[in-house]
Amino acid sequence: MKRRIVIWFVIIIMMAILLLPMFFIALTSFKAYGEIVSGIMFPSQLTIENYFNVLYAPGFRFVDFLLNSIIISSLSTLGSILVSFPAAYSMARFKTGGGTLSSYIFSIRLLPPIIFALPIFILYQSIGLLDTHIGLILTYIVFNLPLSILVLKSFIEELPSEIEEAALIDGCSQLKIIASIVFPLTMPGIAAVSILNFLASWNEYLFALILTFKKAATVNVAASLFVTAYAIRYGEIAASVMISMLPPIVFMFLVQRNLVRGLTLGALRR
Amino acid sequence: MKLGKTKYILVIPALALLLSLTLYPTLFAYFLAVHNVTVGTFRNPVFIGLENFIKIATRHDFWYSVGLTTLFAFVVTPIELVIGLFIALLLERELLGKRIIITLILTPLAVAPALMAIMMKLMFNEFVGLIPYLLNIFGLRYSFFKDFTSSFLTLIITDIVQWTPFVFIIIYSGLQSLPREPYEAAKIDGADGRNIFLYITLPLLKPLILIVAILRLMDAFKIFEYVHIMTGGGPGFSTTTTSVMIYRTGFIYGDFGLAAAATIFLFYISIIGATIGIRLLSKMRMI
Image 1 (cartoon, chains in turn cyan, blue):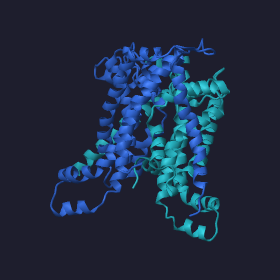
Image 2 (cartoon, chains in turn cyan, orange):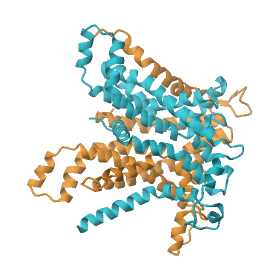
Image 3 (cartoon, chains in turn cyan, orange):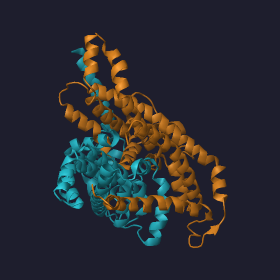
Image 4 (cartoon, helix red, strand yellow):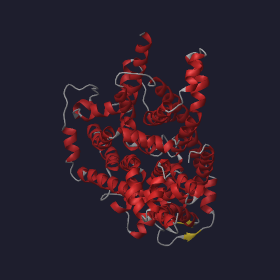
């Protein structure tokens, strides 16, 4: 019994430490400006004026940035699946490219993204993709591909290939087999990869910071600009963080099982 | 099976995208690096040979940043491994509301590193932050971000809070799929908990721990958001990691050529790390 209490105590401490930043930022976002600057930690009353100020800030279209994040994350997720699924199938079933291709693709996941940032910036500048949705979407598709291909490949490798072989003997075309047999069977893997891709795109910062300015900027960039623009308006900064952070957290709560599946598939394979 | 070219056609879109946004940029970086290209001289770059490479190779701050980034990666990874393993073992038993606990522990993984950085910047802020407030209750006055040690410490804490859940969930999932037989045999032989952990659990988990370690090391080496937002690389140059240094050289000071040369150095440094990592992983048939 005593052991159980100790275990619970340790678990609660661990959780408290991990969740402390979020609790603190939530608290700050509901605090009035006066209470923040006078150093009051636990406010006498809560207010939503910070949220109001963020969403209706003059010259700062936060709602637009929110919309940008939704568009860019969704479309890059979709694009990444469309491109990675056929590649993963080919690599899993026919060993296309062998170990070399796998290693090349995986090495991109390991390299620091800053290596690609400057050339992509200049490339985008010369072909007019700077500060466009499509530009950022393309970048996210590419940098989500390694993990997507890897996870889908290991998922497809675990599927029995007998059904596909039987369909081939029955005269099914290769494309039809992929579309109507393999794709539905891979659905759980695709769900897991989609979640990972969506979270990765929503949470990405470096490319969004470099490749967008006003038109296509995402919420994370907008929130970080708040830090410089609003220097000591901590309440507004906290509210902007809350707004940017909430969608992926809610999303993760809804699909946690799939997320865990994707994370572990990406790291271990049996 | 009659496949012909289908299998190649299937990988072409992925490969074309990858090459155009990864291989092309790496090659283009060489062109930039041997020219004097700044925001001002962008339209007509002047060929200057290896000058940029020499500049970077002899610059103390570049190697300082590489050393600092390496140090950071090797400090946070072991700590995250130990805490992640510890939580995974704690939750390896029947507990009330375990699924909710796991969901809550995983929450930091859904938070953007940039937002985590903003939160931590406020947490450690000497006027409104929770940490200085709590320290003050115990009579301690301490302002963070004033010197290297405290700035570096806040970066380490931020990385630990954000990425320990990643280590936890992978080791936890690994624990679930361990074979039962060795444990039953050990129980029959009367082994105690400590010995079971040291001689059964840990060896069985070893490959998994190694994978997580490699992934965390490589990811920690990329650190950009925390530094860029929390310390701005300061005070002075003291917490400037390589990613931040390249970002500043290229996008703040506008020296594209010099930034490209630094990029190429970083590329080879990372490739060495990545190659060792991939060798280890493929040896264990993980990719």
